[in-house]
Structure formats: C-alpha cells, structure tokens
Image 1 (cartoon, helix red, strand yellow):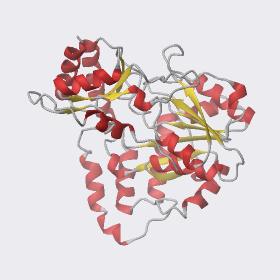
Image 2 (tube, one colour):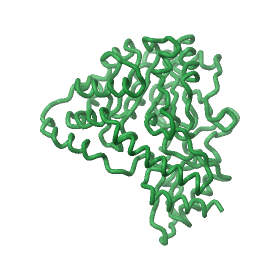
Image 3 (tube, helix red, strand yellow):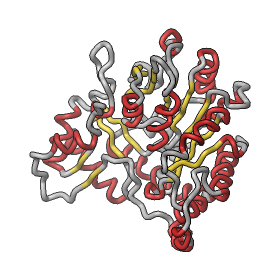
Length: 378
C-alpha cells in the first residue's frame, strides 16, 4: 500500500529548517484538537469506573453507552433510532478506515467518492480497499459545496460527505442533504456523512443526514450512514468515543466484521463517554468560547463567521510561502490548504491558496495569534 504522508508530517518537513522568532511564544493552530480541559464530570466518571479495567469490553458496546448515544441523536436531531441502527465505535477514525474495507471487499471494481479537500483517512481507506477515487471538489465557485454529476456518481459504491466541512467550514441544508440521499437510493450507493463537527456551530444547529433521510421519506435509512464523535463537542479526543448509525441491514453485517477487529472501547472509557453524550451544558459553554474566537477573527482579520466548525479557511496569495513566513517571523503554525487536497483532472488542487487556522485555544491566546497573523498578512 502506498499511503500519502499525513498533512502534519508534510508541515513538519516544510518547517524543519526554519528557526522561529524567539521573541514570540509558540502558537500552533494546526490540529483540530480542542485545547481545553475535559470537563470534570467526565474525568470523574472515568475515575469512578476504573475498577472495570478487569473486564473485557464487548464489541457492541455497553447498553449505557448505546442508550446515551441514541438519546443524543433523539434530543439533538429528533431522530429515534432502534438499538440495531447504531454501533458505538472507538472514535471515528477507525470506522472511517475499516468500514470501506468491509463494505467493498466483494466489489469487483470498487469506487469511493469523497469531498476534496478532505480528512486524509478517507483516502487511506480507499487505498486500503483498492478502490478507485473520485474527488468532489469544494471551491469558491461552488460555494464549497459538492456538485452533483449523476453519471459519475452512478459508478460509486460509497460516497463520503463531510458536513459541517473540514476544512472549508461549509454546511448543507436539510434539502441539500436530501438530494444526495435520493441519489444514493437511485444509484444504490452507500452515502456516509462524517458529522464530527455537528455540535460546533455558531448560530443555528446544523442538520444531520439522518434528519434529511426522514425529510425525504427514507424512514429506514436505507443506504444512509452517519458518523459522529465527542472529541470536538466535549474536548475529549482521548476518550475515543464515536458511533456509526443508520441502515440496520448494513450495520448488522458490519457488527460481525467488527468482532474480529478488536477495537472495543475499555469499559471505564465507555462510562465516561456515556456521561459526556448525555450532557449538553458543557457543550454550550464550549460553543460560546468558539463564538468569541470567531468574533475576534472577524474583528482582526475581517473574515466572515462560518456557520460551524472551529476553523478559518483563509485565502492567501501563496499558502506555502505564507506558512513559512508566519512561522519564521511570528512563531505561529498553520496548515497549508494544498496539504488537505489533491489535484483534479485539470491539475488544480482546490486547497491551494488557502490556509486552515484552528481556533482551538482560549480567547487570550487566540487573540494574540490572530494579531500576529494580521501583521504577517500586511
């Protein structure tokens, strides 16, 4: 298998010969990892259940965790799932990587389409599945929303969307998501939406593919799957708690596959995760911090506040040159957009000319970093 280096490895190689300005404290706005303490009640639940380390966890997940995740979906999206329509996962990275391998195993000429730029695990899953890759380019011309080409989509086995989108911050309405669902039913491909940023919104709550499925009358979620996680919403990426939900016929067979993987979450982590999934107050507090960060970004950089995620997708003349200059002169790290995308048939990388800035620090550190970026831009 020939996997591409991860974006952060490329960034390290880009900056390795540069000595940053020591007059500034280091600021890394590269990784989508909230830099806040995991709420105390989650840590307490973890400690109180540490005695359960003596027990093997079951692949299907504890009933308490499944109930908490189903309760989250019901409360947040007004979608009631049966127990057969959801599987707890060890975060979302593992499921995004191994589900395509499971589903495409018997396909003669497997094909996966996904948004471009993208979370690189999508590409890794396609490579591991020996699948042909189709990129759904997101650019300014299409308002960072994937364009529909039915002839191309009709050849796909899996289509992966990611809305709210990393890195472009774009969102899709319930009607727009519904269009993709109807296409999945018409052309019989599995449609997955990676919804890990669904809870980091700045104004109104974003839509889920599950909501859209009910909206267009697909009440059994045929061919429809969503993936979500508490990593962003609860500042708890180390808990590795996610889920995959939707079409129970697909999930029934996928559960059998998962029993062989050995990726069941340890029981103390499951109890802590259940506490996190059931609580909304701590998520609301986190959203307020991100809103303040975006308010600063608007004031300092003049950028529009996105509907969701904690990123800024900032247009610059040359992302590579700017990234090097910003690090050398101001000791701030950001991620060049081309590291998150791939060239299309016309030789254009839709990530080129942008940098991704992750506003995952507190307000004081965010303000300091944004002022440095502004100075570097001018």
